[in-house]
Image (cartoon, rainbow, N blue to C red; front, side, top):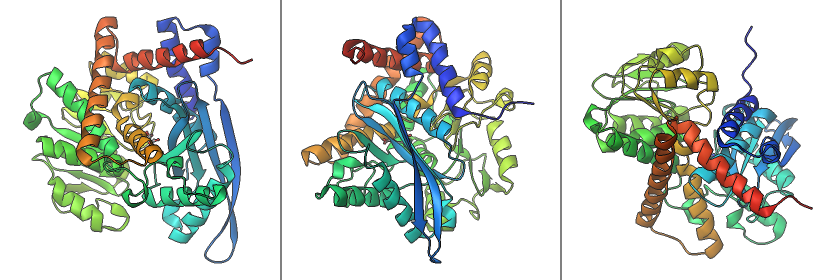
Length: 423
Ligand code: GLU
């Protein structure tokens, strides 16, 4: 029987692979193979019926050698400490690939927010913030949105932290509403960043947008904004799935109409949209989506989606990973031997943390940029990231993933070398 998927083991496996390739010093390898800090908190929360429910939460900082820790907070029933540790390590590499001055962190709470009222989510968030306030702060560790967290949750984090320190501290968290120190363009930044690197890849391989059919798994923050930007670029989006099922239309889905539908639909789901064939069974829909005859497959939901079980079925020429960790290392090998060009998560979804970086810089300076400046800087950083990685991949004749890891791990290892080991 196959061992259950463990994201932390997967993250370590990815690091080990690159360590061999770049001849990483064994001491630095050992340091990077563990997380600097992991805080486990228990969160008693007053529920609407007056009862108290206790949730478990985590904040993990993987590495701080290149700057303060940065990474999202996830609310999901399947959160585990190992998942949060893996995500924290991936944040370290992500920030290093696009060369922004942060180390990696991540947070999570085991909960199902779809089963909780807004007030309960607020109580949970405020208690979490209070419990992790000993390690977060504008100069220490800056949380952000991730799966099932949003600008409202970030506002509560900012407010609770500010109450504790006695002044408004917008720089403690990113992904806030624009009205209270958030940045223009943050909400759609991950999708925009993924579109930008994909567009560079399309230019590189001379793929015309109108002939580049796209299938997207996940229609949340990342998948929906990626769909919007690719639609604007002129690519037909022929399939989209979410937790309510899958929508298929060979002629291309009307994305503006689908976006309007999800904005009005309960839970923001695609079910009930008329513009295509709808498959209700989520597993069947995802299986169909992964095996579709398309040019680009974009997994934008959770980790562990392209596995040894289905990697052989992928017919796409390219995979752009909007999600964190959607492809297992074994599946990655299969994709590579089948000639699929993979834009890896640590590059493809780095647009979110990049605009988070802009938000943090704006907050610290109390000087806010217009949307054109954000778009221009995001384009510059994502394009540079793509070409830096592409150059290594071509020179080393390796996958974009290995190239991205080589770039990132080398950058972090150099910082470790310069700083030395305390004491
Ligand atoms: N949660 C996002 C990610 O996985 C954003 C992190 C951030 O903005 O700090 O990249």
